[in-house]
Amino acid sequence: MQIADLLARDGLPPRLRALVGIAVSIWRADWPAMQAWASAAKQREQVRADVEETLLQAVLFCGFPRVVSAFEQLAEIWPAAAPPTGGALPPADQVAAGRAVFAGIYGRNADAVDAMLRGFHADFHAFVHEVAYGRVLSRPHLTAKERELLAVGLLAAQDQLRQFAGHARGALHFGASMAELREVLVTALGAEPVADHWLARVR
Image (cartoon, rainbow, N blue to C red):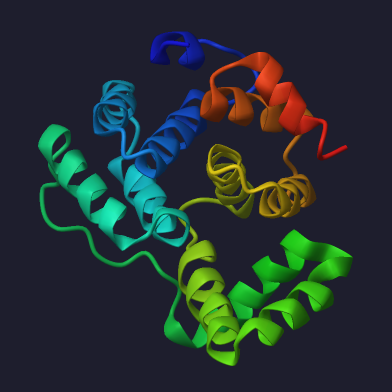
């Protein structure tokens, strides 16, 4: 589907749909698509900080090299008046906020997921809690629901079923609807039958 057609669909605010499109384009290193989504957001007078936060979150899913390229692409079509700074919670609040997000995503499975991460490597466990959740996913500009919907789109695009299912349930825990999940998947995967196939794995 074309970007204009996707933005015209019901079921997901255009602002959030644009962010899903940007995030998935970063994963695919499809820079023309990323620029097109960002240009559409700019034309709709979306705030640039929405896109900046999406790029910062993409570090967790796409890695530093792609996000360096993404910031370069963004600067070409939507220059910032000055280099953006800030936006994270105060350092003293980050760990507790991150653990609250973690608990909100995984619910009754939080202890089991935490033990699994600890079993992989103690430093990996610390990185997930301190950086992924404490410094990134707890940033307040985007809501926990919005961040989980971004994660859903990225993980589906990456074909990461187990993590997709966990974050899809997390999105539901934070108030997303099945209709919103479906529209994120349509945006990320490009076809309704494929989106419905993934959505069936959440029910």
